[in-house]
Image 1 (cartoon, rainbow, N blue to C red):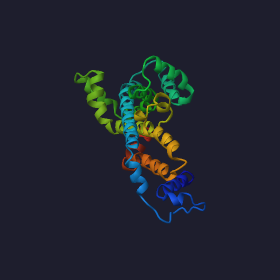
Image 2: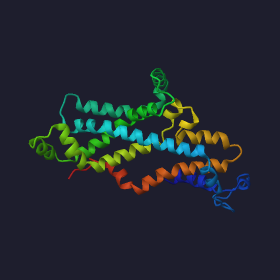
Image 3: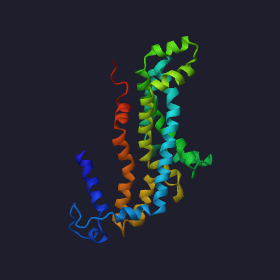
Length: 259
């Protein structure tokens, strides 16, 4: 934690420096004249605010789509018995282990052929495909923790499997669904490769790619603005982790222990 915290501390230090202090060779960790003007200047940049909005939109839509796919898939893996179930479950996880860099060239050509490049809809579809495996595994742990007797009681009362899932299982496993949504939204917020390949118009870029272009624009002349922009991009995800840490930990450990 200290290994990764030190660069973040230095980033925070750079973000509150004046332009004159950035040029000083012997820098102190704590600036002599700290200022918040860098953050004000970055927030007054409408393009940066657009990056934040695009990142929020893509991460939320990708997480919501992944949950929609994961709920019926995780229910099937949890409740149904079929040949090759264990192998298929690990195959699903195997897709999560494939680096996006490996498939970017064929993916870009496929998306271009379908007219889905330069589109948030197209990028969202890729987000859903990438995060559905981990969402399925997370939701399966939550559904495994729900007693099967609830399914049986619902179907005895006349519910179909789909009705039992929507009316009984899903409400009971709502904390697991919430944690799955949060985890996949966090992954979407930090995703760089997919939007970098599929999107090029500045008004469509999410914050992860926007910081990259922001660095190119200001790195040589205003490093303190780049640092302030980077700190601002970290704040939403840090706030989510601290405020909803029980859901996040619950999503990672769901189904690990059974009473």
